[in-house]
Amino acid sequence: MSEGVVGKIVRPERVTAGPWLEVIASNLEYHRAAFLWKCEGLSEKQLRQQPIPSTELTLLGLMRHLQGVERAWFQRALAGTAPDFFPYRTRISRTGDTWFDESDPTPAAEVYEDCLRACEESRLVFAEVTDEPARLVPNEEYGDTDVRFVLTHVIEEYARHLGHADLLREAIDGATGE
Image (cartoon, rainbow, N blue to C red; front, side, top):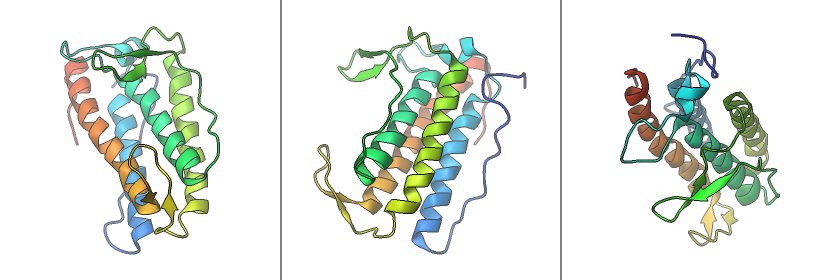
């Protein structure tokens, strides 16, 4: 594979049995790495490519989205702090959702670094906010949830967008893989 914006990604082994928080943390790490693995070796142009006519999704747009997921759910929802979101350009999609605008000039390498920072910030917050998994967390979208819901929802976000990334990557260069 050629050298791209995202370098070599090593996906960690998952903990499949044991304390709940260890299983959740390892699965979250696995999904983070799996998404970046789908972007591995691609050029800026490829990461910005919209290879599937029926969708406006790009791998770079998903990367921007997932850094926002990390900050919104870990920092804002779980820690109750104001995240320092990078000011990416947004637009309203065909379905009426706010999405990241691919005309944003931020280089893909900077988006990648921002995504890595967001994940690291979440790792630091994780250790501070998961001591009481049943703690209620106010949520405008879902109503009051608990820490367990938030953690599984972040994994759900990654899993959903990994499916998108699978399709996008295959359409870009034919690469497939779990």
